Length: 343
Image (cartoon, one colour):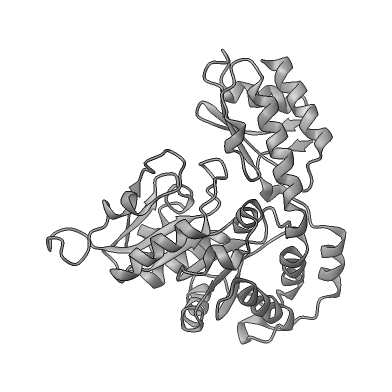
């Protein structure tokens, strides 16, 4: 099968499998797993932060950040298509007692500016009977907006304004390495001004399991306790951290290939009957195209693609396809040929 549903479907590389088999391990709940410790130290170093924590999932990392940055009864300002708001099962309400305040980006790109954000903020001068804003959550790259990227300059401007009103900023950087490659900057450049950042090892970076939460040392010390409370305390988990080390050291070098394949896919799809997409807006590895004028539903198209050995995800009137290192240029052409036949 050609699996374009997500970059979460990547298989660990041979190098990862060897590292996992040979990993030195210990009990991580006691802080004694040397491979986990090395991964955490290296992640903090790469992001220019004081400390990092290995977690089983990105959702856990995001939700721990929400918990530590907020108080019950506060709101979290977030772009309306943000993952934390849409795909984490209202965990911010269940775990932190907070409410999302979704905001639409003024240009439709999914990338917020301070004017978009400030209109939704309820600071201490707001009437006593409304919820105060406790956190601003950003996403880079932005999944449901088609892998769009927030520049380091935009992030810096937003964080500077947020700091003036003592508003913490958390970055859902699940695919921040893709964003960094697209911008030709480092992940540290993209995340320097934020208070905390979560990034996934198990998406385009290719590790089988795991995400990282990065921030100040005090923040990570608290996060470690919340990881345990939420059931994320793991034992000889160095067998997974070993793959994560290769993921952050080696895989970013080839992410540009995924981006090139995504652009080829977008350009090809733009020429198909009933498909609407602007290929110039595809800058990372996510391709979302509208098929509302195709005369056949997105779900039907994906079902027919599956019959041809191709997996994709329908989203309303659109279809999402995500490239990754298990997808070749030949796979892209096969997919385009199948789409042309169906449409």
